[in-house]
Image (tube, rainbow, N blue to C red; front, side):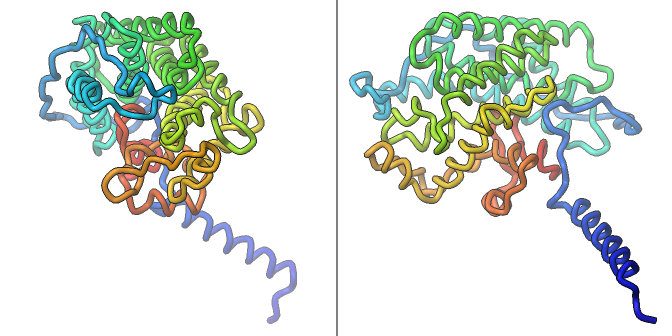
Length: 367
């Protein structure tokens, strides 16, 4: 019997619904938990959890780093090899701690059934540095920049494990107080910083640090300062999707646009918990920046024309390192793009210790 037009429509709608449901259930459409990992529901975790918890490195209490760029270069684009070696050496223990910490926090998120022992290990790492008042003696402005660039990773690791079962309350209080103190240290420095670095990528990293630490310590004034710092960046984004202060970096303009986008996108994710849509702010400025960055990854011509300088190539094979674009997993979760998916798919998992570790795990959902 021939189908009436109404029957045909209803069946078509039903088939479409089924196809959409299948697509959404497919692995490529999985959704991660994000930064704010909830408490356990029906899953009570492993009955007798085991986790090999190595000891963290010695706490870095004092830091006095200096710029790795030649000071005679006003664009801060030419590296001073001696200064860079000194800088990298000073940063080794800090980076090793940050990387190890987020890996442990990610292990907790990744575990199935959930393993509270991994969360307890991450808390122990945090409490070890908190008890030593790590990162509280910053003796140069660049050391304070480094604090702003690493504190976000510490706090984002804590947010991943904060709601795990049976964590020791006294340790959590010490960690939260430490994160808050470090966040306030960043805020105090930036509030008195009237140089260009008070408005460029350094401010955005400081904003991420304050937002993450504020949410971790339930200090909403601190968190909101971080969101407002991101808005300082968003307000500068041009209709072409550029940041003028990062264009001033000459041959490293593309590189610094990538670097500046990372904390802005991560802060936009945290701002959602404060009911603030940074993606919509300033007429969608953040998406313009992301689109400009993505378009430049294979072809730096726009930045070369805008700056009059040939852009620095990426090391090794000339392809942007995966850790530099891990933040695109956050953007892709909210604004799916075939172009970005093609860029990320062959390179997963993508991770950056500065913004919480395995971003594919947290935002794409692959375990």
